[in-house]
Image (tube, rainbow, N blue to C red; front, side, top):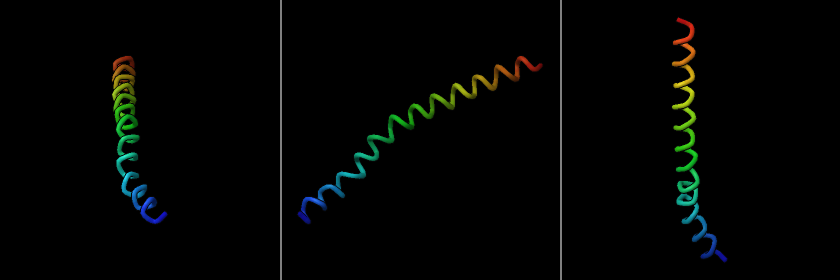
Length: 46
């Protein structure tokens, strides 16, 4: 039981990293879109 738990703890960071990568990519895409929208609004205001 203890050995199994240790194995889970060891695998956890890699799983977190794997789940975090797509989130980071989508976050970058959203940020880029937000900047595009902001630039468009600034252009319209001028």
